[in-house]
Length: 170
Length: 170
Image 1: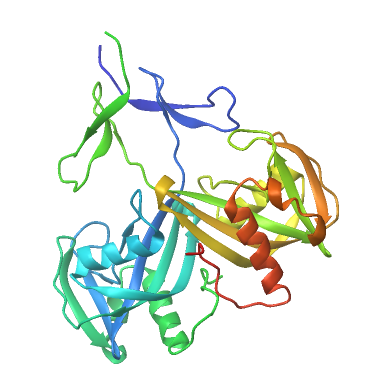
Image 2: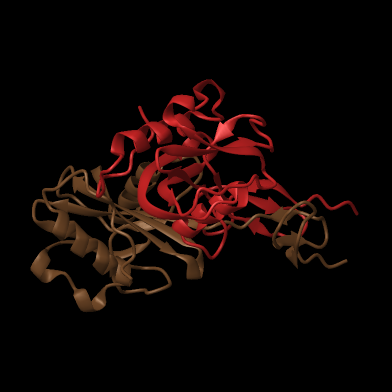
């Protein structure tokens, strides 16, 4: 008997939509959108960027971001990613942006954070980490459009607080 | 051979934390926090409330809320819940609150929405639906603390826009 794991698309009893079900044991995989958390971190006028060591977009630059894990708040998740990918301790001061990406069922929540010291170190998912002034941001080598959106909104909201988080540009 | 489905807690190769794995076929269940979306809906000075028909908290009152589904934005999810639970067509105008509840790995995103007409009808997950003035909100019979928080913040932010979403009170 060769086991295949959850590979059937079917509507479980009492549900109103199809789910992924294991044809062998009946386990239902409830797939819901995933939350991606991260932060645009700054030290004085400089921005923290990480060069991706993992697929997709290896070699391109991003703020620290990653999947939110169980049993953390969105803020804790963002600061965990900042630590894991850039070796940076920071504190969050505002929610900068929320990007729903329904094509891939993700919700990105990007914070604005202040580094507590100027220290950083590339974690296992980063090829290198840098702290650069606005003029030296590698705009052509950013990993995703939302990295640019987030950096631009941080710049626009410098010194402001109590603002609404930006959404995905139309 | 009796199949048990994913019932092992173990660290998959290359991962940095334990996941739920099927001991029969090796399928890895990546469990991440779930997003709950909903909206405080109003028609003029009245608030839309639903009495829960499903566990937990059957019989208690809430704004329409539920699990975000795949391939929708947070706003679309909130309006889908408003339609499914209260039979209401509404439009979103602001993000009112974000409540991280790490104890149960949920992130609630509650919007402020205006009903397009005063019509409503209880959906399958609601025992009844009502549109009540502030003075008639059944404060003692609300399903969860965040229902109260959301209603209070809607009241506080009436007529304002561009504000930061409220977090969970400390």
